[in-house]
Image (cartoon, rainbow over all chains, first blue to last red; front, side, top):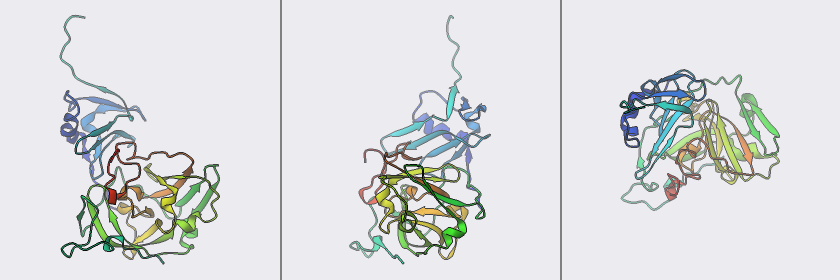
Length: 93
Length: 199
């Protein structure tokens, strides 16, 4: 049986960069199915598909989907509990 | 035995067969998948049609292979824009599988080993339009193309032809599937270029 190749989450930088103003290359995500927490770059991305499907490296459930039409995009983060984003230090507080 | 070649029935242009809008012809058979290829043994394989009342109609591999077999030759059109003409399959018509299923449902949700789902009107599975296929080009359907068995619904974009299909839920309500909940069209007619929601 031929295993379909997947690539690591670093390939999401460009496509997600179209949607988000922040750099997600160093973001941390939590899998909504098994609770695994890790870098977005560590997701397994199936790109030979009608959209990008990023799966948890631990349980293989879908954490993120991105479908790109010529003039629209759909982002599904239903399988991601949160994204932890590095931010510049806030002033005060 | 059903033999349909809808792609050859249109008007030839410059000697080439008509393709749906926005499609290109490929001699290859690209492999697309939204996840790992599930390993499904024919010994434990089953296909289950579940009616809207919860009644289950179940076939083992041997029972499915014992049903009348058809050998459709059809054109297939992927929403990623490739089309392949004259593909040869063997399998069981959904008419055969639905014969005897007591239902008043209007919608079907196909579900697969590995978790994939796709929805379509039940009418699109009837009248010689859909098959449960296990053989491609005279050989066992390879796992990367959906083996042991996949749906074949060639008049819709190929994402509707669920690989590794395990069963069909019949329902009164339409339930969008995997790609239909991520921007893709609910119906997916390639000749009307229904790729995305709103097309």
